[in-house]
Length: 189
Image (cartoon, rainbow, N blue to C red; front, side, top):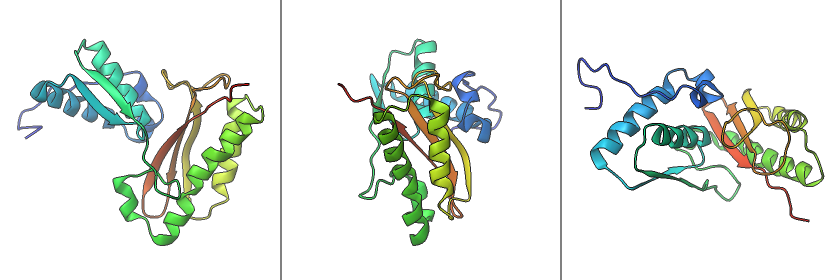
């Protein structure tokens, strides 16, 4: 039992967890950090692998391990996507066939963003607006919780696109709330 009766000790990262998902799911990352710490204490791994799909969670766990001097290497694993670009997630089972078609808009918005960056767009807020405009054109995307171009380490809004920034996206479909992200690359000249 992870939380037996009388349990009152928690592990919480307090900076990265305030942003993005942290504003929509208060306390979520405290639970993640606590459970992962307990798991690490039980298993005592040398390495731990976490998917980049939940990029914020990956960065929080890496920060927690560093801050608490845990002798563990936390390694990010690339996002696995289906043939349409949809990031693999347990939540995908809740999507109707029509929602599945329309939610590929997230991946398409990343490809659009990448193209705009390759064409010279360097202003993160303008890129965010282009992504939001694109996503808003899909009727089954009921709400865009956030679109953010962020520094890949601090998760703070990026000041300029130089390459390596992450686009973080969270949207609500009728059946599920989905998150995804994309690493922006600047082509070498």
